[in-house]
Image 1 (cartoon, one colour):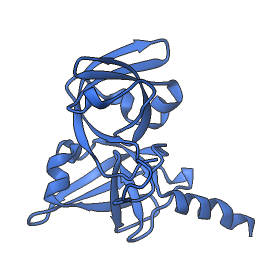
Image 2: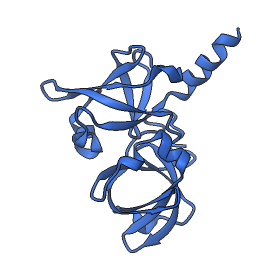
Image 3: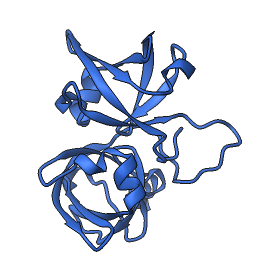
Image 4: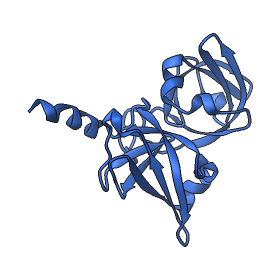
Length: 195
């Protein structure tokens, strides 16, 4: 379980393909605090630590994960958003995030608005995922509030702190991002047709 509040960013230092799996090695300041089997969200994708060496650790993404996320698009040197799982008793500053990405989206525009930024993302609406105005959404692991919700797109506004301390500073028109829609919204949309 995560909150969508990014702890820090990490640099992808190695990628190793093994059959349909992708082993990703990440360098981060908190590597010395990690242990094998720990869950960490990478651009919003919950992955398990399988190896630790010096200031890097390795996680493995399987085919199902690569199919639904942007992890297969990453290159050595890319920056990923990182969040370790919540501790019992922590404040929930963002919203309830599972680390289970629903699908990818494409950034259709980035607009600087006098000190902040508005990012618009388009996604495949045939999956029946939805956003609602002022509801929550998770983009590359960042808990955000939806503005301008449409059937196949939505926008989010980014404050300078989030822009500087996440990989939002690298997102531009055409960038592929991971989207986790709000868990409560997913349950409601699934249950409504049954009534």
